[in-house]
Image (cartoon, rainbow, N blue to C red; front, side, top):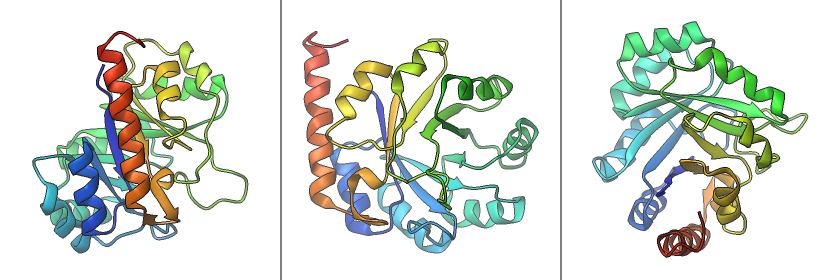
Length: 223
């Protein structure tokens, strides 16, 4: 298995160039004003153009209305829309119908029962993103640098396509992949020196670990 790697919350040419150079399959831009990773659509579009065709461009929104999405799609021209709020199944269908783009639906997870929320979206969302529930008092639905008990994901049907997020970094990425067999990892704070500030050394260190993990899998060391 070669998992997808999504680096999210990108804001600078240096960070996006390095992420894709090192092997990011997806790059995410966050359109949520409360986030330190928030970016305007025009700037995001210019950054995306640097790597377009080499990585999937993902627009991350939180309960955005169609007017907001129209502006984002016009400037960014994303490959995928990620809905990271409380969007209903009906809203997911509406977004897909209006914009004609694949949708990743994000869910906050803490305990096994939280996974039951996915059922209503199966066959509607093109992929799920499973993130840790935000700490009490946080204004951010993601990017909080916390994780959850990955062992609960064993309860999911093996056909459920999801990316794992929440508290991932160079120290636990290999363990996360080995425990969950997730088809993708999504990182933001795990490759930052401060909220919203991507750290080249941490990006390189993370991809070094991923390269080592892939090598070990190809040699049959891990499954």
